[in-house]
Length: 220
Image (cartoon, rainbow, N blue to C red):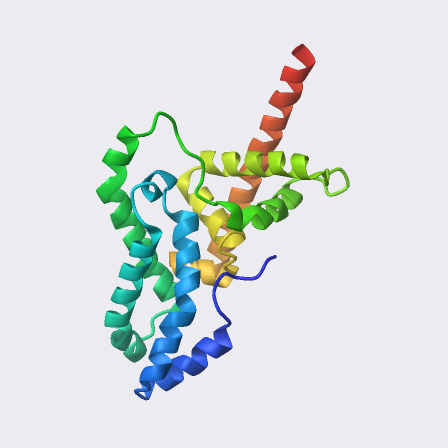
């Protein structure tokens, strides 16, 4: 599986230790090295319709500002890994942003928009497609890969929210099962079971879509 969007944990831990000692430079470095991952998260997960009305940089700035204000409390009582704590702040801001803009955004859109995964996740989508399809027959042509990637993303978007969420966390944010369990407040076995069910449902929908396409082609 691809590398997590978040910085390496050992470097983060060193900066957290220095920050607990009152090292201002360590605090600045800690927040600065997580700014780009927060931006990527917001770009991936904030509704595309809302992104047409809201500058992603403004959302990121609000997230980092709040994180800076709450950092001391976190350092005194780190209830979860730092990147998961920061992810939760970002998630809360994305929900708030969506709620404030969803009505006006929907009025401007004539149809549903696909997942806001964008070009940064093309490789993640292809990796996921390879897991869903037989690698012996998965075509390598770029045009076919793009078509398959679009089909995967459309199918993910049609999943129920719990299934959709855990697949995005595992395959686009590249969180481990342990991290997903911590973020969703589940036990690791429960998180693993939810993920397996979601992947089974995604595979079933992909196969159903492929069968429908084959039937349509045969009739035409």
